[in-house]
Image (cartoon, rainbow, N blue to C red):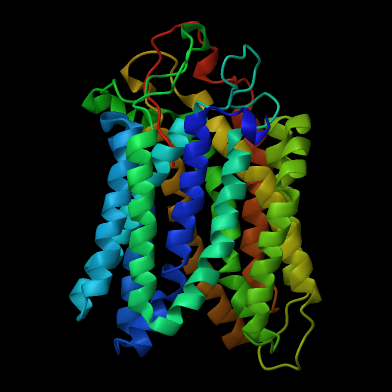
Length: 440
C-alpha cells in the first residue's frame, strides 16, 4: 500500500529505521580507518574489533528477538537505541584495545535488540488500518517491508556521506553526531511510539505487542518448527549472497587490476537500483506469489554469480573491464530486492496463531541469526577457495561456484518447503487474543 496509508506508528518506525541507518553508516564504515590512523591499533586488533561487532549483532539476533517477545517491542527498540548510544560513547572514550572492543560489542548488541523488535512490529502493519482487505504477511497490495528496504537504503546512502564530511573534524566528531542521532531517535520513539498498535479492531487480530510474556520453553518454539528452521537456513543464502558486495566483489576488483574507487561506484549502483526499482520489483513479486518470487529471486542471484565466475580472471593479469561486475551486481540486487521483502513478510505465517509461543520476535531473530551464520561459514569457505585457486592456478571462477550452487539449491528447495503451508500467517486466525509481535 502507499506509504501515507500506513498507521502513524508504522510511519514513525520506518522513519526511525532511516535515521538509525544514517547514524550507523556515518560511523561504522570509518571505524577501521580511525582505529589504525588516529589510535594506532594494528591490523589484528582492528580485525578482532570489527569481527566482534559483527558477531555481537548477528549472533545475538535470536536473543534480541526473544527479549522483544518478553519485554514487548517498544521496550526492546528503546533499549537497543540506548545500548547503541552506550557503544558509541565507549568508542569515543576509548584509549586502549579493551575499550574499543567493548564499544564495538555494545554497538552490535544495540542493533540486535533494535532490529528484530522493529521487524516484528512492522509485520503487524502488512495491512492498512481500518481495512478488511488482505494486506498482510504474504498477501495484499504491497508489504510494508518494501518501505523498510527503501528507507534503510536511503539511510545507508546518506550515512557515509555525512560521515565523510564529519571526518574532517576527526572520528570523535562522527561519534558525537552518531550519539546525537540515536538520542533523537530514542526521545522521539519514547514520546510517539504507543505501547501497542493504535486503533486496532479486534476482528483484525493484530497482536498486542507489550502485554504478553511467553513461557520460557515457548521462546524456543521457533527452533522446534522444522519447516521454519529449513526456511531460515535456505533464506539465509540471500544474506550470504548480498554480503559478497563486501567480500568477493572487492577481491574480484583487485584481481582485475581495478582500484578501490570502482567499489564505491558499485555500491552507488546498488543503492540507485534499490531506490529506483524496489517498488516495481516488489509489485512483480506480489503478482508471482511467494513461492515463485523466492525461486526467481534466487535464480537471479545464481545468474549474477555465474556471470562473475565466467568473467573472472587470475590476479596479476592485465586490467580487466568493470562492466561484467556491474552486470553481476545489478542482477544480484534485482534478486535481493525480490527476495528480502518476500522473506520478511512470510515469517509471520510460521508463527502459531494462538498460545504463548506466538511472539514474533524469536522468529525474526532466528531468521537473522541464520543469515549471520551463513555469512560466517560461507565467507570462510569462499576465502579458502580464493587462496587455493590463486595458489594452484585453478579456473579463476572456482570460488564463485559454491555460491551458484547454494542459490540454485535455495531456488529449488524453498517452494518445496512452502508447499502445503499457508502463507497468510496468524493474522488470518479468527481469534482476537493473538500474541505479541516485534520489529527489526
